[in-house]
Image 1 (cartoon, rainbow, N blue to C red):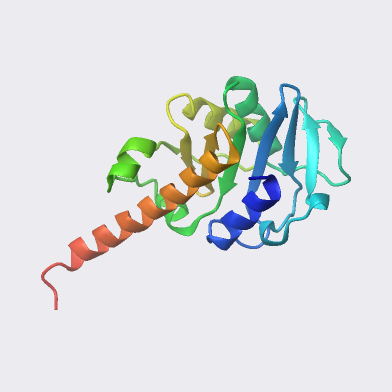
Image 2: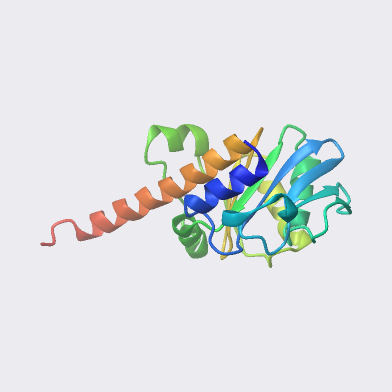
Length: 188
């Protein structure tokens, strides 16, 4: 899977809308391919991709990299085995993050692949504080929910990071449905 296919997949799955979210892939030890700021992942093209070095300098492409580039760079610097970072604004997972409410493992997949998903306190987007805080939470997890912001998943490839983003959203949906049904149990 390449970055364009990845962007279209998370857009089609409803994990991002409009120009939200961003994706990156580590090309080698010194460069990452990242979506440009203001890119709609549903219609992403080669022109919406930028190559940056680990200092954030654009080495290929004509657009500015994502405003969350610092977060992507800090993650790659800290964890050599990570090759892909996906940042989504998926509605159910984002709602849980907004409320600071932890997700419960609701099926074997969420238990095995997500475990206890950390929720990061609010930090303004695009800041080094957010980048460092997200990076710190990833030492024990491949997923982080960011309060009032969204979700970050990482993987050894784009497929793994996207599958985790999909699983987080599915887990959040099931959590919501379970809580809603439990509240309404006995009514009607």
